[in-house]
Length: 178
Image 1 (tube, rainbow, N blue to C red):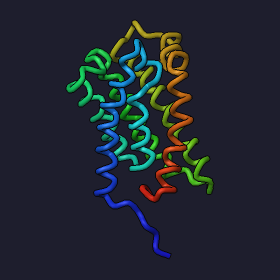
Image 2 (cartoon, rainbow, N blue to C red):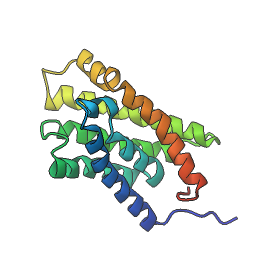
Image 3 (cartoon, rainbow, N blue to C red):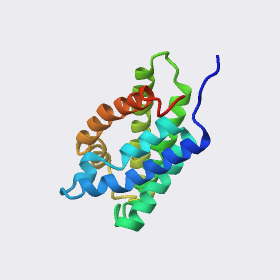
């Protein structure tokens, strides 16, 4: 049986759309005070890109999105850009790698395992780069836990609710394939 797969052109177009969404979506949320750190709007398109386009484009989306957004909109602020860039790069990379590696036979399970694995890896990298490089001596475990999990809980829940449903809907509509 012949298996239809997305062409590299289609993957590149989808990745470009994810980058654009990663610039526009935060603009909507940033009209509310602290909404970026609460709802994590830039994370959604980067994770989506990794899940549907694979790790190379997911990684590229994770690097390009915060850079372009910072240049175009001023968000994230330059002070937060390096650690956020590392975090988002890991989200795109790991979500794509895990989607390729995890094959339970159940698409929903594969999606959730890939998504949760990427979310944990990205938050771990975010904490490590802040503690060891960008805010060395000023960053602690309680600060990381609060920022990465407590403050971000609404965004985490949104990602867990929306991303698998979105990927499944795109597959059902045959807009994306394996």
